[in-house]
Image 1 (spheres, one colour):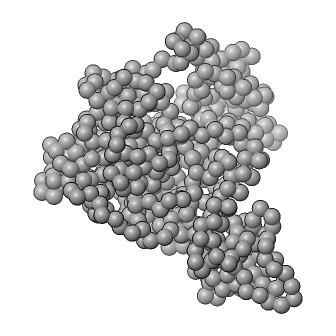
Image 2 (cartoon, helix red, strand yellow):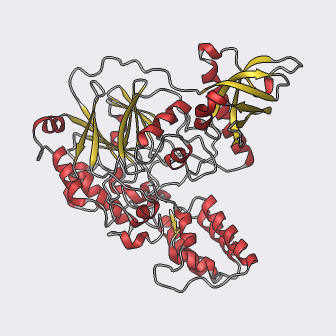
Image 3 (cartoon, one colour):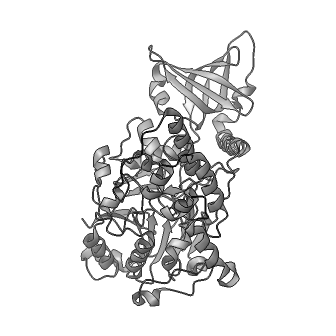
Length: 545
């Protein structure tokens, strides 16, 4: 829910209380901006010390060019660019971190870096031999449909073109599959002439603006052309709902093929989900997210009570019966608080080392009964690539968790079937863009915006705002198959809804309000855990606050 590493660019002092960056000319400011932009685009975070050194370099762009070249050739690439990566380079030498990494790999077996050792003996019974494959990968009750691969991108103009073409073509086919839209065409294929004709045109939303008269003009495009769409009167509410970069169909009238007077708007939407007969016996999946282990504001006692409940050591009545029948724990990102995620975060950290944060997380997860299977996807605070789609949490940082027998690490988004119930999992970063853009949606009720994402058939339709998207040739964020459960987190507010037979849930948090959230007016609702019965998809919220 927090701005990513770029926020360090607004710091006035670094973690060692050094003086502010020296005054710069406009030319130097542009050079600094280009240097920081290059680091961001390459997918790295900056520590405050590294930020300070680059900011005080006489030639920041050249320094960052050398830095990125060196980091790209390191056997194990860092998540965070530290002082050790930059300091020697600023003096024209190879960085100590690069030399150490090379030495470590040269001295290891098979050219692989040595694994991080497990943090304590106490969870030896929950760990397995640490190979490349996760122990839970072949569990017959779990079917991973997507979210397990690592993504490779180059970021060229052709990549962006392929990415948006793929999005358009697949959503075009979804819209055309509707019985009432089988006669629709793309916007560049509309008829021209002198007489008005009725049309149905499919396109991607390129721009949207509202005139003083109250009419909304939307420009739709496809790979070959574009057209303006005018929405007036009764379409005002639907016009307000239209998001940039989503694919929609408009019906209306046109005379010249370049301007459409609309009378309706249709979204790809999901078809109603028909409930099939579930499990014969009650079995539960516990859904949570945003644990933020390592933060001073992590609700340690409450989280331990939650684990105690899963161990059937506390609770009574219905909640005790649920605990005895838990099969899965699904964590939708931000398992740890991370390092360098938002301004002055170090002041709110109880564990300032990222490795140790994951060691502490492994300790907690080892307390979960071994018969409960744990599925984890990354969030923006985790050690992972900052763009969507996001591969699983980097194993280098979370090795103790990867070695646990009952844990499966997936990417964002992920689609996984648990005893035949299909879960669409995402951390929910796109809610930062979707909620402000959607009418009648707010951070107090994130599930409403999640329903609208189902209507758009896309996890993150808006490009170029707060949610960074990776331009793959295949748009992994498009919702092809309709899930049974759509789970997210990120906004630290729990909420549950049902839409066309799909259970929609945002999982809340285990972290009290941070100063950064307070400055943004975000009020979390921590300690509430939605639990879903896989037999009938009924959701029961349990409050551990």
